[in-house]
Image (cartoon, rainbow, N blue to C red; front, side):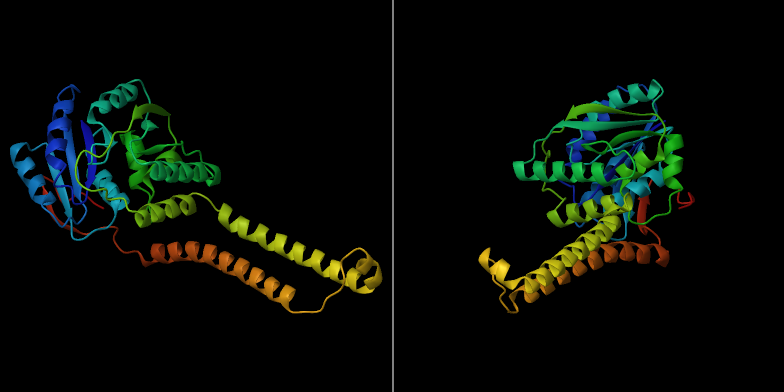
Length: 318
């Protein structure tokens, strides 16, 4: 069986197109399949449309969260309840073309346990494309594992990989990073990412920023090391500044002839205090990001709460 997991948040405008295109694509796979739609606390008619689609075709199943928990949690819930030998992850907005899934399945049948789609082109505006490019470059540079560039949610994972992800208890989840961390045989397939089929973009700047922070902090301790290196650099600069001031005070006349007279004042002291204070706050902020995530982990709350399901057996353990 092939399982397709799709997180949905206020997607009533695009769901009819998704049902039609994904349904038509699924009939070409030649495999038994299920489509698992995870309603992430939508405030529109998303859940009603999912229920209607389930009534028409029981292979379309649904989970409705009690509130909005975020895309990565919705994807994790879908992974938890998916039953297929292979699990495909994709967005609901049809920027990930359902017609491309056949090539993911073909690569899986050749023996690859993870097949991820690499975005060759994007239809977003220049600013958004630049932001995504910067994020993936930074993540690729900082992460202690190899996370492919421009590979987002759209992917296929073998059941063995899915079981590894299900065993991961962490709360601040970045699924593409977890997918890379799991290992196994992986391959990327390029595709052209289209524009959103309908509705409004759900990934706001704040959501994307939080996702970027989760991705970088979850898979790298380099920011902590950078804070240490920055502290040493500032301390060294302060030592050089103190040594220069002492020498300048001893050889006042010589420096005066060079055009560097000794001038008493508070400007240098004030600037130095501001600089050191800024460095300290940056380091505290980095520590706070890691500490906040540790705090979220130790509370041990459920990742999600389910309000209602469609065609799903609730005895599957979380």
